[in-house]
Image (cartoon, rainbow, N blue to C red; front, side):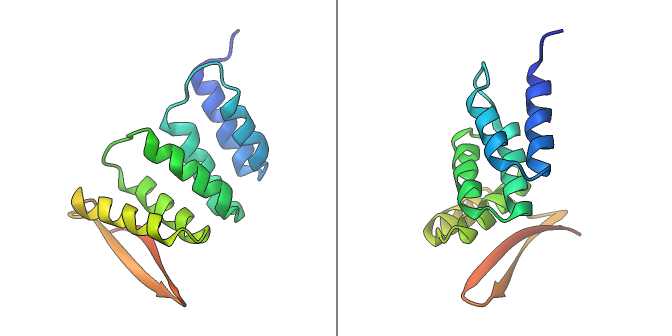
Length: 126
């Protein structure tokens, strides 16, 4: 049985959750097809969980390049990844994108919490 796209994406998620972030990133790079937003978002979430801000910012770049559409959870992860890596201007760009696309309005609300010198973005279910 040949591995499907879903198998590759699942493995990125499992490896990332285990904290083996370099392996997860290497797997994405070695996929025999062009990966979509799914593995990059999995890696981004794993980087946040395991505190690898710079790798998370790289994954965030790839998520934004993929033109994934109006999904606000990846925007919040991207914003936090950029803030963690000290890329304040990039985080501000993501916030502008969220406002321009009116993400977080309606059932989901965007909140900002001031933490020392930075601002953290996240989405809440209301």
